[in-house]
Structure formats: structure tokens, C-alpha cells
Length: 246
Image (cartoon, rainbow, N blue to C red; front, side):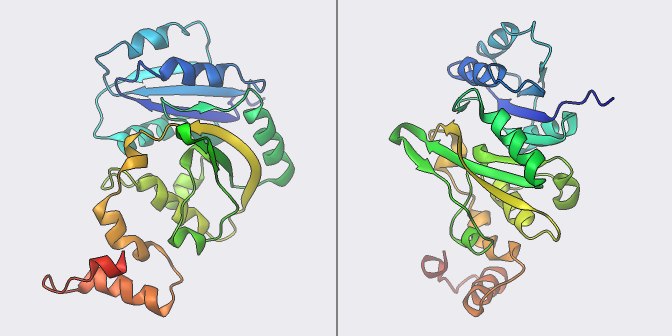
């Protein structure tokens, strides 16, 4: 008998006492109960750990607190600690939109057997619903909100873990890699997954080196995209067309 959880929900936090309790409750109140919630704390100095201790009686919640070198280093630690077949990342300031999210995604996974499944997110206080079915070409100009994605843990064996040279956009690179894997089934579920707090660092910042090398992450490129790739990789320092090619 396999006692491993179906989902590993990973929440990375550093000094998040303002929002963390709401996020934890949105997970622990799920109608689908076969999950673990991993809190990866970066040595918070506020009341973050006190909030976590409020839920110590729930054995599905596990917490580690140690220094890290940034959000993607902490997320990679969460992947390594995860026991579930499926991984989902929930920001400490985000929350699952209702109590049936995990139930509906578990049913969709068991029915369609995807490797990567994603839905929609509510985009901060604007209440805009963000998310749609995407192709690999759509990702050249758009992106998928990470808080709407569930992925099999073994995907990280195929793509590698999050690239920590990026401070804000390693998740976007990971998504691009997944969309290009052979025999890797991706499914869109027309369902809101989470509320995404848009004041977080990843929603308000972009890595310059991610923008610079974005087209190098794609296998199939048009002629113009190949020119952009060549420009960013090999241009002389004095030749500047960044405004055109971003």
C-alpha cells in the first residue's frame, strides 16, 4: 500500500506573518485530504514560525527553517523534500480560491492522466481572471501563472530544477522547458485555482538576463526570433537594439 500523498503543496516564505495563516488555512480546509503542505521558511525573524505552530497538530503540515540563497533555491529544497506524486507551489501571500480545488484537479488528473495541468488565477485586487489554454508559441510573448499549475514531480528529473541564476523568472523558464518535452502531456482545466497576490517580487520584477536570453530557451524559432537570439548572444557591446528586440 502506498502511503505517499498525492499532492505536495510547497509554500516558500520569509517574514510572511501578514498573509501566511490565510494561505495555510486555504490548503488545510480542502475537501480532498491526500496531500502534504511543506512550509519552507528562510529563517524568518517575524511571527511566521509562530503562525506555523498554530497548525502543529495537523500532521499533513511540515516545516523547515533554514537560510537559503533566494526563492528558487528554497523552491528546489521543497521539491527535494516532497513525497507527493504531484507538486504545486502556493505563495505565502496567495490562497486556494475554494475548498474543492484539489478535489477537482485530482479527478482531472486521474481521468486524463496528464503530466502537467493548469488552470486560472485571480490577479490580485483587480479581480481579473488570468489564464487560458496556451501553446509553446504563446509562451514566447505570454506566460502561465505559476499559482495555477500542478506538475508531476518527475518533470524536474526531465527539465532540471529551477535555475537559480534567475531571481524572478526561473519558473517561466521551467514552464517553457515542460512545453517542449516529448511525450509530455499538458492539459488546461478551465477552473480558477488561486488568488495571486500581485505585490510579490516575481509579479513586479523581471530578470534582465531572462529577457535577454528568452529566445534561447525555445527549440523552434522563426527567422525573426533567430535574429533576436543571435543578437542577444553575439552582438558587439556597442551595438544596441534592446528597445526593438525586447
